[in-house]
Image 1: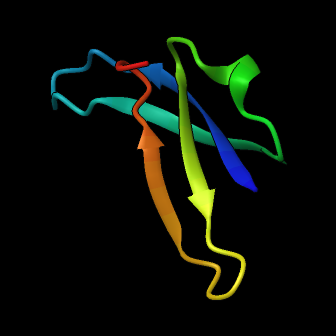
Image 2: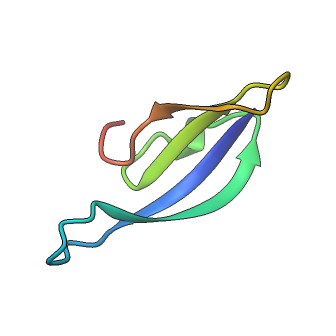
Length: 58
């Protein structure tokens, strides 16, 4: 399972990279292999998240 997070670049004076909004949990993340989405793999045993796709590197 994967957590999809929608990201919007801020380009503000504080140089924060993006505003992140958790979107949904999915089994297939292929539709989100594009700019603007981070994908985290959810470990089913521990619930830990591992970033597998950054919003600007897909």
